[in-house]
Length: 296
Ligand SMILES: Cc1cc2nc3c(=O)[nH]c(=O)nc-3n(C[C@H](O)[C@H](O)[C@H](O)COP(=O)(O)OP(=O)(O)OC[C@H]3O[C@@H](n4cnc5c(N)ncnc54)[C@H](O)[C@@H]3O)c2cc1C
Image (cartoon, rainbow, N blue to C red):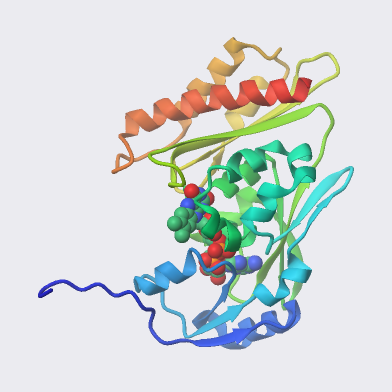
């Protein structure tokens, strides 16, 4: 139709299948910012089709699934390889037992087609402010293991996300693994409000609670998605809840802080006020559920 332009194919690019992590890092080092890794491709390829991103080389890391697609549940921590797919996170009973928040979140992420291919690493590296798994990892105080030509380094989620669509992973580096510490007497939960099933969040919240032997709150974390430039942890909530007895009054305090501390914008998904209301309500609900799970 005259005057309309609908580009649905990406610009030409060279394609290379990775044979090992080190070989992929070598390629990234040699090709620099003209190259990009492709994992599930569910964020990168739509952006390339829309010409929002253009890369001369794509390095496909899917052949590394045997090395980077795993969930290792230990007594002190859980380690998840960056190429672990949404479906694998959803279906792992071991992971759901250690951190039920993953299954809560995966149940409301996209659809089976996306979940069959999309990966934890791709989700975190895309750094979309509405990303559910980033909010989950922020809530759980996860660390990210990044490998490059100069070796391996470990960063917190706060250090990992440096801005919307921007992470601490350099052009010649690969996110390898997510590490999540395990502590006794803990519970966690995730809730999302979406306009229709499988859609991106209007707002979503994760909460994690760690209880002391006397039943008071030893520590608490809340992570919100879609209400700021990145998925955000809210340290003021942790500071306020520590030492309190879990109660509706405590959850209410946390909800008020969440609504005040987040930074939503009015868009087609809802008004700023509505999103602040959701941040408040979802914070209360997930904290309540996290405590129920910690006690059970
Ligand atoms: C229709 C649709 C609905 C969706 N709905 C939701 C939703 O409700 N909630 C939600 O959270 N997400 C949603 N998503 C996004 C989905 O979760 C994607 O799978 C995810 O964002 C990207 O993962 P991927 O493996 O496909 O990454 P890719 O698209 O392959 O890569 C994304 C970016 O990460 C980089 N990258 C990938 N892996 C690594 C690595 N190991 N190290 C360094 N860089 C890496 C790539 O170079 C690229 O820049 C949706 C996607 C679609 C298409």
